[in-house]
Image 1: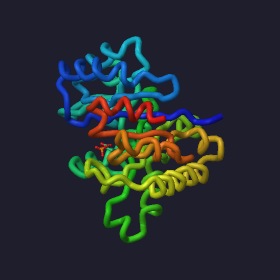
Image 2: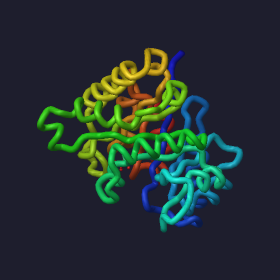
Image 3: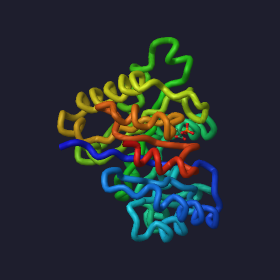
Image 4: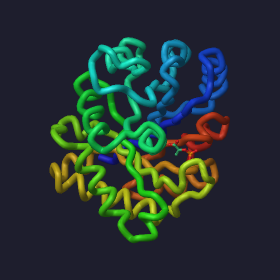
Length: 249
Ligand code: PEP
């Protein structure tokens, strides 16, 4: 069976709860789709308002981050059951901005992935290489290592439900998109790595997105590739263009 495309927006640190509702009202009719799963990953404080605003639509709500402990003295962090109780069903884990500015590592990513599954949240697990790594020719080795650590102790049944977002760091928020061939090469390598870690069934079931300056003009070509199952979209997810990305055909 063909995998469904999944298009997720990463709102980053944008939109107050009031603005979130306004944006959702604008985007609702534009992202309606029977064929594509649509997720809005919003700032934690926006989740309750966003969940309310998307009721009765095809849009699901996700968080942009989550801590790996249940509760306690971790000032400022958001626990998994807070996200679940607020009504979100997805969570982005290990975005490159979190790795760069908040010192997240492959090991913390793994802890968060395990915790997300424990709480019934679907993780959107980010990986990606820097420009320097690409120029050194170590992209695939680097990504394979990120994937192997992220999936430590994740069961096959859990892995089947995971979403991996391949996001070359040099393409995020820069307007530079990987070519569809570059993106496919890495997404295919990720699927092969998952097959090695698990089996063919898991590799065929798992969702692998591309992210990095996806827009209304390049989505169709990227999403047409056999191993690219949709996208994680930053800047363009805050604009009506997001509807064109979801309805890319
Ligand atoms: C992202 O934030 O995950 C992202 C891919 O951003 P942009 O689409 O703006 O490059």
